[in-house]
Length: 82
Image 1 (tube, helix red, strand yellow):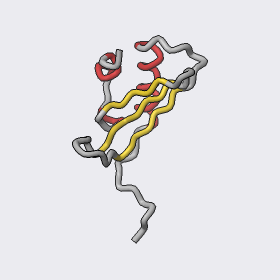
Image 2: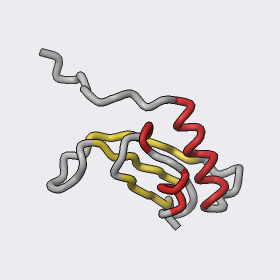
Image 3: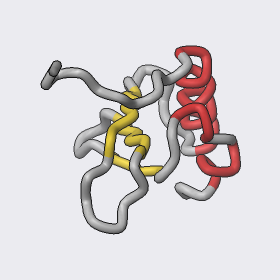
Image 4: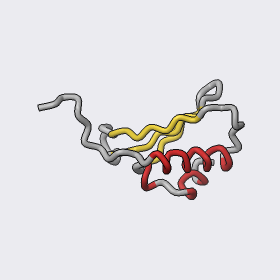
């Protein structure tokens, strides 16, 4: 039994880059500001099993959660963050 294994689908690196591109354009983020995209298992009550957290590294950090896996996110999901 491996206590450190995670049975979550891997995020497609190309889709992560596409999401970052949408975030930069739609949220009008300066190109010099890093964006972090993390796909996490959500264990909170009522939360879907996988969520994606988008962090725009401004001061303070802007954080957004989408209750979908990275590979299920589309441009409309990013538009809904505004």
